[in-house]
Image (cartoon, rainbow, N blue to C red):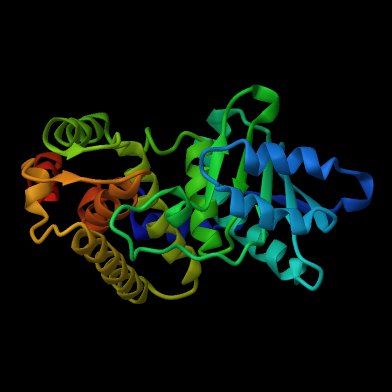
Length: 308
């Protein structure tokens, strides 16, 4: 399946693809053991530090639960919030983006046979930071997807900053789209180049870069639904410029003046989480989105020009 702009716009505007049954507030049906949930979601993960965990404790007694039914699937959205938070506007936004995502990837979702999704949202106001020599999980990570054990499968998002992009990112993981959307040869060639040429103190996960690229790309299209293709392309270019700026800040903080020094192994790229994937690889892929999603894409050309 080709996921160029035309295809995505056609899918998200097609009213017959997915029938949404209902969005229901089911908070009154549940009494949660919030201390246990918070410990499992926040404390017992490598992505969140102790200060963030302490901040989530403020939300122990304030939560809302919504059930969204899509065809044969049920999505349970748990929102933990402070007293005066407008959770209704948040659930409307989540509902809208879930609709768009499920329309875009109907084939993937049906094949996945995943009929239940638990989505936990914490309304922490933190933003990502880049003004450090080496970035860690608390600086740039905002959520995660847990696949095991089977009774604990879930998506957890603990920063509101760029919520919709993070939601798309984790949904791509949840439905295993990240490792299946690109042609096998293109994926393998990119991964082999990275593993064989780039020196780093922390493993580089190629699929994370692909996931982040797709999330930025889709989030931009979804956010600008209603605009024509040329207008959306302008919005995509604006996002490319923003992420290029992020990438350059990260390189500057590590005193890397020429990005080619990374690709030729002349410098060690330092990271304590998936910084290279999220901000270097994702940005390079994003800059080539039109070539990657061409129906007659030239894989050799992409491989030759991606890391330049």
